[in-house]
Length: 444
Image (cartoon, rainbow, N blue to C red; front, side, top):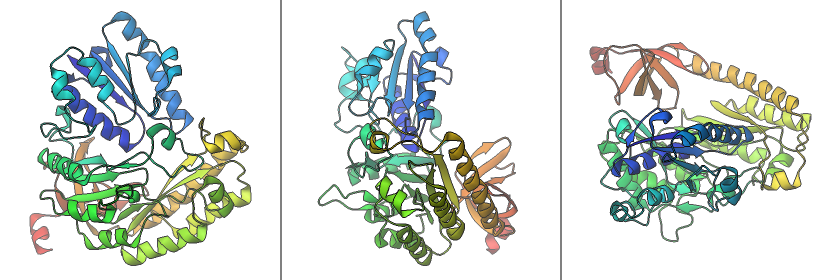
């Protein structure tokens, strides 16, 4: 029996798919990269923007012929297209789908596959959807090959920005127990993982919903002591909740990487208020200053949405100016896309034309490319420490502590190794480097 998983969207979905794959393998299924060969096909979907939803539904329609040829094929629709509350309209729209699973919940598929089967007792012998079973978290085809893994620690979100569909699709904020997280990290390290990225829609709020539980800073310190774990990252942060205790943890703990992902979303105060972000442009600028003062050499990434309802040219230029002034390392850009059910979709007119959204997107894209090139140029000739993940087109790919992408040509197998390299070329999105000789490493 074979299974195939198609994953679209955020790192949370990637983590969900890995755990589902491992659960299917405990039932005797074997992974296949070809959907045509599979007995079970899972589509793990994203709906954060309309383009992602369209891609998911298009992929789902493409599976109909496979189901027609093989009625025993099991098709599972999973993720944010389904949502935590389910969607009866989906069942009517896609009658050939056998199982509908909420985000982060393999339970419906496992139950469907184990009906009247004694294996169901083992497969469902836990209340937690993420619990470690037999120490296996990664599916077989990823073990020993996957160096960096995203680990969900906060599920759902309760902040409810007016543009965001996540609270409606993933439910209210729930922090996972610290013991469960530690057990998973130890299991992943035993499977060859060197780097963990802690995930949450607002990861800084980890533990806030647990009266006596540790918060994110404490969790970072607990995980820092796990032997064999080389690096720890976390995302995504929020300006309202990124506190001094988290800054201190990043500054003090060698395994916690000095890279912060903290979205501003817009640079105009009126737009930020309409988005229900809870801070001002001045607040964000002050926070960036504090982070840079507390964590020397830190890299900072942000998210920006252009074309939010009512955004004028002058308001857009406020966003442009913030980005130009702060010179952040990365800016993830998106054009506003109304999502059904959100406050902005219900109460605000999507009045910025598509062409204007794209123009603003390109303006910021060009600005950020210049900023990124300027930052990258500082690395030229410098020695940086890189964790290598995989070989891509004959070159080894890895990342610096500040999350810069580095490629190195070497005949050595450096997967999972943390090595110093010298940067020989630096572009806005990646760098090339040469490895140091053993003598040079020792001298350093």
